[in-house]
Length: 376
Image 1 (cartoon, rainbow, N blue to C red):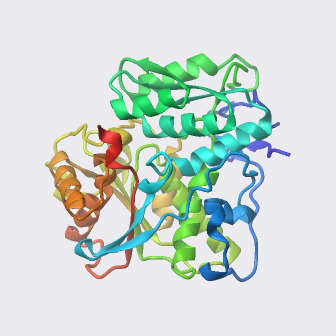
Image 2: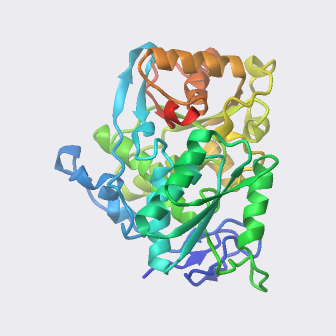
């Protein structure tokens, strides 16, 4: 049976179903009421059957694997020229880490008996939700900016989903999507029944998937964690997945401490960095639209991102266009063919070192989140 929803702020609960609220009546993002986890000594990587991908960690996941390509367990490779390890999240089926959340989100949609899913996205999440909806045999409407990259638009269309192109920025896209699926209700913004909001920002099932990013890092390192993980932040789906995942591992007794979580945003689209950052080296950065995947003015789970930064002694900084371009070129020359949004985190790694926040010999993992093939 699918888990009900609960509000972490006001405590209200909602019954699971295809017309369940996409947000609490108090305005807070909802969570799954159930959060299982095993206790005891974790098995070593050699003892784990990783053929199921991220679903290897089923004991932590309150969703059954109804829709999957056995995605996950992306490789971690040494990058000595960067003084870090890269986790290659761009080798997922659709070329983006968003597949972590799509497999769990569409699996929950199947559990609920949903017929149609609706999502809004700058491209990567939309392509991922469309692909997994096709795998599930569900219809999908994907709201995207009118100027979405052609490669991402084609990925949506060829999966059989219906792209809905909206003029204006990402906020306009989200607003149009919510208007399409929402019905008036006395107990919160329920969904109309014409489409279930498979939002990578609001839907709690998505974060069930992204927290496996942390599980994999720990398992691949023999249940140890690095000193820090540097992660790009738009809506913060991977950042929050890392925070939730590492926190749950600590609660289960699998790890002893949390790594520092260091965020990276693009200059001009950096609301979190503006609140928490103290970045004198970045003050002269000009706004840039290069990292289109993280152009988010107001993250849906803003408070939890701030909590993750606070609880891990983390931070968030803004990176300008020149460092992003330089990092992209440098990654390509090193054999990592990624999109510019992905390069924000490696560029931020250098900035954190320049600021003295990370020692040159610190043990750092950086996810490479999206394929360069998606920029065509």
